[in-house]
Amino acid sequence: MLRLSGLRPGEQLVLVGDMVAKGPDSAGVLRRMREWKARAVRGNHDNHLLRHRREPERFPKLKALAQTFSEEDWQLLESLPMWLRVDEQHVVVHAGFLPGIPPEKQNPEWMMMLRSMDSEGNPTAELDGTPWAALWQGPPHVFFGHDARRKLQLRPWATGLDTGCVYGGTLTGCLLPERKLLQVPAQQRWAPVQT
Picture 1: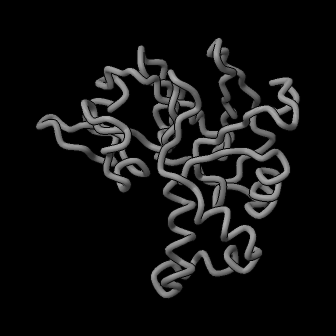
Picture 2 (picture 1 turned 45 degrees about the vertical axis):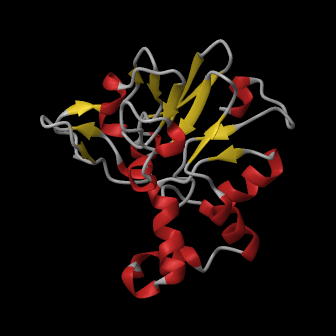
C-alpha cells in the first residue's frame, strides 16, 4: 500500500485503528508507525490490549501478544486519540460517530464500537439497523474502519475503509485531498472470516 500510494517518509500517514491483534506482527506494525511518524486512532482491539495490560485476568488470550511489546509500544498505544482531524475537511475515527453530534462531544466507547443505529435511533455495535455512516450529515467527512462485513462504504459524508484484509480481502486506503481510493489484495488470510 505504501508503494502504491507513492507516500514518502515525512508525508502524513493516518491509520484507522486496530493496529494490533489483527495480524502476524503487531509490534512490527507499531515499529513501522514510529518509522513513518504515522498518526492513528485507537481501535477496539488496541483498547482490548491496553485493558489487558491493566487487568490481565480479563483478557488472558492477549497474554502472549502483550509479551512481545516494548515500553515504547505501550506508550504509542496509550497515546492514540479516539478521533483525529486530518485537515479542515476530514477526520478519522475507528468505528463511527453518533449522527448529529460533533466529534469532540462523541462517546469514546461508541467511537471504537459503533456500526449501526437501530430502528429506535439507538447506537449498536451490531449490523442490524441502518449503518451510522448513512445517517452522518457532515461536515466533516469521516474516514473509518471497524466494519469489514459491510466492506467498502462510500457515503456523501463518510467513507468506510475496512475491506477485510485480515480475513483475506483487500487493504483499502485513500489519498487526500482528492479522495482517491487505493486497494491491495491480502497476501493471505490471518483470521477466520467473521459471519
